[in-house]
Image (cartoon, rainbow over all chains, first blue to last red; front, top):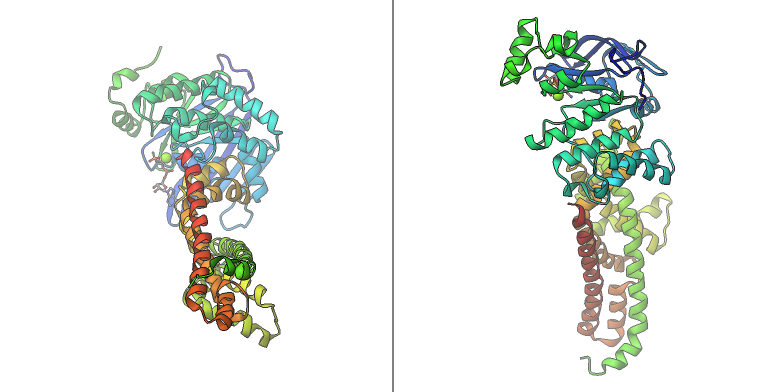
Length: 273
Length: 219
Ligand SMILES: Nc1ncnc2c1ncn2[C@@H]1O[C@H](COP(=O)(O)OP(=O)(O)OP(=O)(O)O)[C@@H](O)[C@H]1O
Ligand SMILES: [Mg+2]
């Protein structure tokens, strides 16, 4: 977790992750229609858009849970081309390595039910990063302390609330020390009273300079915590800019329509101070 | 009958014990073979390669559609014709293991399909290899789900060892038959053999109940 040049600028100048002309089709259905994006270190990018606009698919293409149909991806020492037709799939070693560097958290926590909280967090550091068990436990206990669940380290996931499970899932991803974190509607499955604890954990990550892409329907969160907002519409990035501008002052009709649908009280999201 | 119970125990006990050891040995070995075959069969049925899927499907189809006794005969009496001669015990273990493996394969496949997609996703998203994911995350959960079915299959494995009496393996059933031939006391000896089978299968059921209680902790 670098502290980076994360002050008023919100981010450093060098892109740390970029995609160019990213496309993804399932059979005849083209879900992503050419997306180009540069992410700089420390940026907190919220991704908003209607259901089916391709937000999840986009995140899943970034850590190659889905293989893009076309386009280019640049990240650390990875420079991957995805050409339609060409048979240059990334090797499975590349896939694994890239995924250790880009963490992802899902809507349905997906903790492993047969492992305790601590075992969930140390599993990948030990068996993927080849960390020593002692070191992994030390790190995991630090992370669990930080999310306020140190006492639950010996519990099985089924004994935790949804919010607690989701915080453990975030800790599990952080235990790999990723450079970028992807969050796909991580609060959507939670009871309303549990949403806050997960969002505040994400806010504190953002404040520490973690680079994050967050698919969310929590517009207030996107506006207050994000440094940048992308509006996805039918497989393209229709709008891209500071949250105050995108959410607070929507230009296109489609974005205005979308915001009207997801925000019950639009006045609440007027241009923020 | 059983008039001289203790005399019988002294006289036939060692023979029954030896036959029981054969039953246990063949059972354990054939269960191990069946797990390997079952795992290969289940994974093979989901393989990306059509020929592997074909072989796995044929295996399950053939075994489940033919009597186990005929399969035992094929391995013990049939194989020598194509140049593979096996001792009765080895042939028996292979035949029973491969046979039970087809049922285990279907069990594992059902267990696999009961694991939520998110379990695979979260493992891969953390950089695990497919193999590491299966071994450390998925199969332990599958095992928990299919344990009752596996126990049933193990109990069948115990009982199916009696089929090997037909290929000269002196297990409990054949031992009882041999004793009956000289003593003319079929009731006594078959009942004795049945009771020993019953003890073994009951212990297995208890074992499975114990594991299920243990696993209940995290569900
Ligand atoms: N594996 C797949 N096979 C076929 N179609 C898919 C697949 N995954 C996604 N799609 C389709 O791609 C489109 C975009 O899906 P995606 O999940 O990216 O949308 P989203 O913006 O995340 O929507 P939501 O807000 O509902 O999560 C949808 O029409 C969906 O049906
Ligand atoms: Mg989605």
